[in-house]
Image (tube, rainbow, N blue to C red; front, top):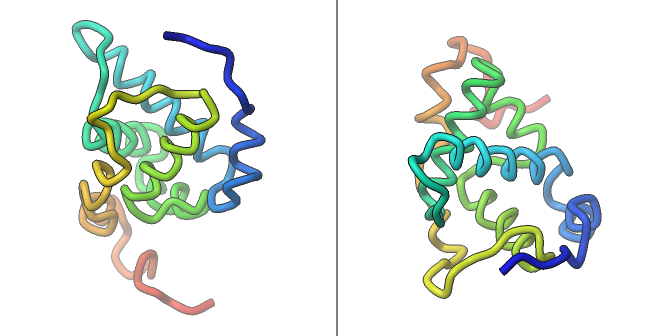
Length: 130
């Protein structure tokens, strides 16, 4: 059932305060990107959406994917879950009774999946102090 969202994405981003508003838009774009690749529109799991965010980030940002996500405040797949569930609460996305925010936990390790795109010695993800 579709309803009018209770809050805008901008309001959600401001209220949650953890992630740049672009992170919320990007997760929504990744969902649409994934839907366009499925044979038919259907509900997707947290793991599927997490993988779609990864794939779209790499497609769009290449070697800078992890850096862009980090700049938006996204450092793990659990962040996707917090974004998605904030959007669900605001009426921007929907879920089934089986969906749980924990479905997004540890889907993959950012350093492992994005590390192959990183230039050796750039210090990203190494806790390097500024």
